[in-house]
Image (tube, rainbow, N blue to C red; front, side):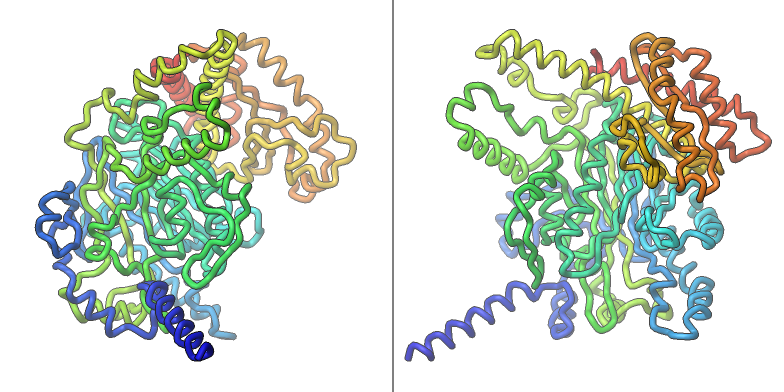
Length: 636
């Protein structure tokens, strides 16, 4: 009898587990049931904004702002100042698509590059997005062809004259497949870029308004069991967006943060949980039918300050994008995502820990802070910018198209050149937004500003004031560093190293008896056949600071010149460039000479004077510091 009960109980657990985990992602055994479910969804060409529920009373009570849905094959409207449209698409690299052809693989890859790949690029460009985020893009010898595909107009839709390409693993030689972000220089200007393994983070400036926003383009590991790898890559992207602070806070776009790309997991995964809640669990965590062990320290390092929202939230996910990828033999799934947040939105929801809180005990104080954070994540966030419309990946009334997707992609004959379908969103200012007077642009509320006056000693207040002042200086320094790195990146700089100690440099391999290994220059990169080192200082006495910086790294040129890695790469090491600016944005003559040398080294237009480029960039840095000095939260 006991054996029979155990068997029944075990069978019940198996059925319950299969029902809960066998969702939309890769279900080869349920294509017919899923097709029937998708056919019953609302018409994708309509406008949806209500929760999918059968209770009409609940719909009347919970009616959010409606979100438009762009049917497949149509595009976003042209945006105006203060608006932004972004599209993400995995174009399927020819070298990946043609794997397994044996001796004929090279010929198949070349044919695929000439036939299918251009169609995949046209599909992404046809959405008319301001910013285009692409995955599985071939670089190397194919970069020239990529540039032509991007610049070419798609019907009435103009092309993209600016782009940044990075391999999936920048440190691996010969790795040509990677990520790409493209934009139109008439609308936006890239002011900084940071590329890393399986991701890239770019900060843009809207030319007309001066608003700055940040976009992260990622391609997370595809192996289903690589749960920790996806979490770490996503956490790296999020951490890098935290340094891209908005300089001014007067436009709805200021401080907007986007994370998009091919996540290789669905919208209910632990990776999506990290974005939505700001943290991940430690211990044994499950994702689909796989599990991984995350240590407490690793989970703590992954914590971040944002509360991200999915552009396809629960109200429109089933109607707009239940499928974003479909693999032949494995079925359809939902792997491509786009999340957005605001840089400072979290601060208004979490009260700072005071001396009064610490009296209750450290453990209780930590639990209280964690509960406040979770409450902030669960409550409705008020943002100055909202999603106006999204790209729909399916249209249930087109049964043949839906069946083609479920059967597996790519299918060039039916208009699906990639195994992924583009996703995207159009962001517009909220109707209730008022420039410079929105709660998310306030650091903390007035109540919180005066909360710490009582019960805090004068020494504690003095330490906090000193910390705030040093933080202001650091922010100005980082703003100039981001601008210089972005300027050189667009002009062909490679092998960029930012703020890393010398002993971690790959150029230092084999170097003996190096003094001051802990020294960390602000920027090091390769331009042409020259290795350059740049130090940046904002504030203080410019002439004195310049002498100190040059003296600090005076020995580095001689040490690097004898390094084996430098000789192998046949590079010449130049003297240290010192970009020193006072607090008001004034440049000494020596600093301008260094900018002129950098402009001459990285010049891409032989007909254009390097001195003109240096003056234009100097004026841009001057404007950057003036705006930073005029901003309330950056004012010392």
